[in-house]
Amino acid sequence: MEDRYGHRISYLRVSITDRCNERCTYCMPRELQEWLPREGILSFEETLRLVRIAARLGVRKVRVTGGEPLTRRDVVPFIAELAALPGIEDVGLSTNGTLLTREVSPGVPIAQALRRAGVRTVNVSLDTLDREDYRATTGRDLLPEALAGLQSLVAAGFELIKINCVLMRGRNEEQLVPLVEYAAEHNLLLRFIELMPVSTSEVLSEENFLPILTARRLLESRYGALMPEPQFRTNGPASYYQIPGRDQRIGFIGAMTNLHFCESCNKLRLTCDGKLRPCLGSYLEFDIMKEMRAGASDAELERFFLNVVDRKPEQHDFRDSYVPGRKMVAIGG
Ligand code: SAM
Ligand code: SF4
Figure 1 (cartoon, helix red, strand yellow):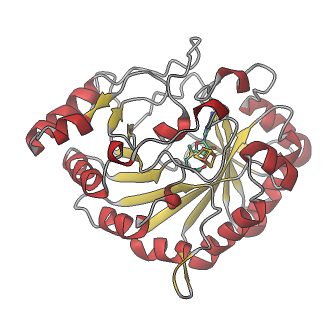
Figure 2 (cartoon, protein in one colour; figure 1 turned 90 degrees about the horizontal axis):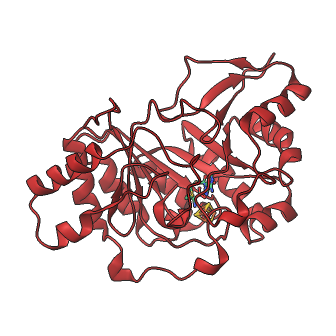
């Protein structure tokens, strides 16, 4: 699948729930906390059918996200089926990490079960190592659970574990170095992400926006000049740098300040309520669940995918006074 700007779509982010056990300020605004009714959510069978069709059209990588995907029952067998679909080469998971130690059967934590089910990479959101800041950002006092979850991923032997840290001025500048040290100690790939206006606008203002360039400067004042590694990529828009004198790289995702951010976009999103979104930072979304439930054939759904890709914008609208229409937790970050 290729759009009119030459973006080649090989990556589908699949949100399987709008529910979450945390309440991150930038993701889930307080006034929008009612959940979608169950019949409004794609069943796993419906999701698998859509991914199978996407794979026929060239999707090779799927990332399961949410909401918090691990709050959904039977997520492990679903992921095992996803990983076994013809054409799907890579299955990743995004999680807040807090539920990873929960046992799915005696002695088997969900982290290990996910590895066995075929998950290759796990991204864990962690904005701070300070318990009080963590509680203030996520609305829950679950830092010990998140850290235990990360350890259970390490113990399960995942080949790549990433930490995603959303940059917030006045909130986590002082946590950047501790996070780098934590990532070094546990051999995790740390990425810093610019805050995007996907939640209510009051949490996104000049006062709390911290550009990746400022974060890089802060780290350079501690570690010396970071060395760019343009040849290192992980299937996404991060730019990676090496810390001088160390075998450690860190990533920066400048969704707002990197003007070339969208050039290599290879993504499409499927929301948990069955909408295809060609771009996170655009209002455009198309109701493929409605088509499917109205009895569309696979060929018709294939055409639907191709039409959505054809509507993919050249770049996101975040810089043009974008007012979010939907909370991130429902779209799937
Ligand atoms: N619950 C899981 C988690 O927290 O990783 C998966 C879903 S969450 C929506 C996916 C990612 O989106 C997380 O890394 C989160 O930090 C990021 N995210 C949410 N709201 C954001 C925002 N306003 N700006 C930038 N990243 C955001
Ligand atoms: Fe939940 Fe993840 Fe959103 Fe935080 S970022 S509220 S953990 S979905």
